[in-house]
Image (cartoon, helix red, strand yellow):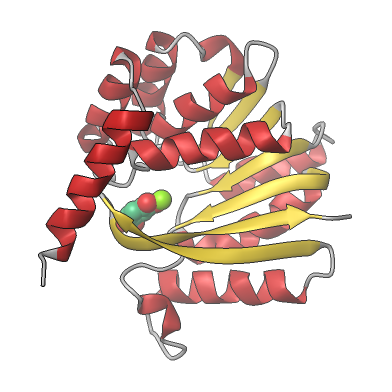
Length: 224
Ligand code: DHB
Ligand code: MG
């Protein structure tokens, strides 16, 4: 047998060392996580690179992110869309937004990222009201009970072909407890059921282990 958590961590570090070089701006963005209201919630380096690759594979030039925190995934996505791309990222806390803006500035992508402060549901509603140009890639990674609300909003803000990724759909296996009293678990279960019922959407979910423990992503493609 082996100590799974430490091995997952070691393998993640090995993969990141081989394939996921971080410049100083990414390192500082990741290391500023503990100064946010939710330490350790940022994606792992190899997950940030995964988001960047998925974004590029989708061809998206416009990205919408629910949940900014320190902006670590935001830097990955902003670099993925390139200098002619655009990222809108929604953050509840001004304290976190200020940290994110500094990280985005240091990463050289502040000009292509808008950090909107306030409840992500309100900010998304405003984007819909303003008939914002659709986004090609959406990353849903804010408060988990609101996942169904964020997916609904994402469907008002995307086009056929858009890709939507949802973080944290496993949470140490808690997701299989249908009777869970945890609103975060129900937020995941409800959004998965909503996805399954929506004929516009093709989706899967994957479990991951690594630096962030046992968790997972849902990957969605909007077909029409
Ligand atoms: C938490 C939130 C996240 O988005 C994440 O990736 C990990 C943990 C949390 O709420 O603790
Ligand atoms: Mg997350």
